[in-house]
Structures are given as C-alpha cells and as structure tokens.
Length: 104
Image (cartoon, rainbow, N blue to C red):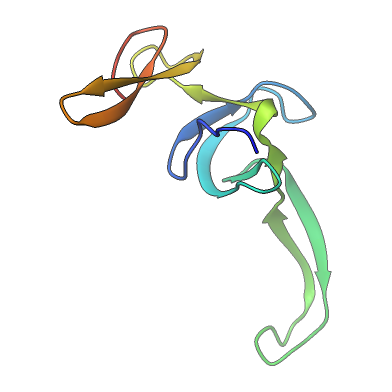
C-alpha cells in the first residue's frame, strides 16, 4: 500500500481522465483501493427502485470514486496544482506545498 498524500477535506483538481480540470473537495478516501470521492466530480447515474425511504424511485446522481493518481492537491496561495512534502515543526509533522512552501 502506498502512502497517500491526500486527505478528506482537501481541495483537489483532476489532472487526468474525462473530468480533467474539475475541482472539488475530497469527501472520502479509500486507502485499500487508492481511490477518493471528490464532491461534484465523476458523477454517475444510479437507477433506484421505489422503497419506503425513496417512494418515488427513479434516477439518482452520485459521485463515483476516482483514482488518487488522477488528482492533485491545490495550493491555497497560488490556486494551482502542487506536490506536497512533509516537514517537522516542533514536535509535529506538517504537510507543505512544494510550490509556495506554505503549510497546508
């Protein structure tokens, strides 16, 4: 298993695939499959039967997972995709942007 540099709550940009250029917030990360669910990106249609919870049924839009290698973290200062690094400040490890050297 690889070390993931993207966490829930990060703002990311899709850098490859059908949704290239789209931006969104990471909702959930699956460490075993190396995939993340990004808000508003990679939307799929799911057909649902009527039930007690959803008496109407019909087509529901939801986010599908996207591979970690296809997304990149956005630097809050420059608003561009960036790589991340880890450095020690005091007793804590913190992530920082390689472009602006700003703590994330």
